[in-house]
Each structure stands twice: as C-alpha cells, then as structure tokens.
Image 1 (cartoon, helix red, strand yellow):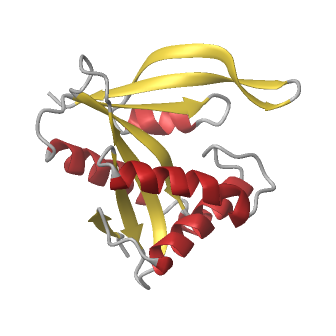
Image 2 (image 1 turned 180 degrees about the vertical axis):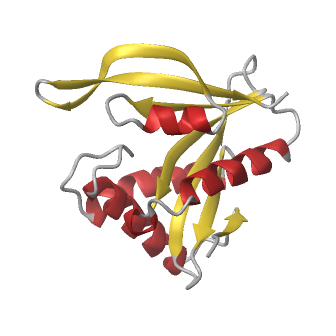
Length: 174
C-alpha cells in the first residue's frame, strides 16, 4: 500500500502527536534525525515547536506521508534559505519513515514527493540536505539522485569517542 502525501497539512493535536511519536520511534530505532537513543517525546517537543514557529513564519513547510490507516508514517521539513544570495535552493530536514515501514519503498516515495513539491515552489533550482556519516543513508540519497558535494569529518559527535562525518548532498532540479 502506498503512502498518501500532504504538503502543509492542517496542524492540530493529531498531527503533532503523530510527528512526535514518529520522531521518537525513528530516533530510538537508530535513525539519524537529531537525537541519540534513548529519547522520549518530551525531549523532541522543543524541536517540534521550533519547526512550528518556522512554519508559521513561512520559512519552513511540512510534507507528511500517511499510511493506509491515516497515521503519520513519514515526514520531511522543507526549509527555504533566507540568505538573499541563496534563495534559489531549499534544505530538507528531518527526513523520516517509521521503522515499521522500512523496506516498503516509502523512503524513496517520500524523497520523490519532496522533489515534486519543491518543483512546484517556483524559483528553486536545487535541494540540499545533510546526513550523518556511518549510517549508509548517504547511499540511499545517492540512489534518489542526490550527489555528495561536501563532507566535514567528525562534525557530528554522537557520543564521546564516536564522531561522524556531516555529509552535504545536493539534488539539482534543472
């Protein structure tokens, strides 16, 4: 069964709870989405609030993938670049697919839906994202058409003695 995607869905308690639960489940399954397990929903809530503020200001948009039961199964935050010389590309943040849906092609579907959404924004020539080295997710993004354009060795400290590269990837839209 395929996901149903919604760009800029109505924000309410159901969406909030769904995104927070997804974020915690992905983090606790080892996903590189800004936290290190173990993590609780209350640990993530301040980041959700920051994203809500950015969405309210029009700086960020939310793309949500719903499963066949209507539950939040995938998300990505699409953030406009505010620098006047870099407004022709956007960032993808917190790309997530629920661990129970891994292996179903939903990650590829999410990336395709994000690309399609961004192509509709007008004036955007590329999508950038960063990912944590050592997870293999850079190979996934490469399979979706993204190219590695930069790497900062040891920029992400997961734990004392466990530093990972910060990998910058780009998808040109032209």
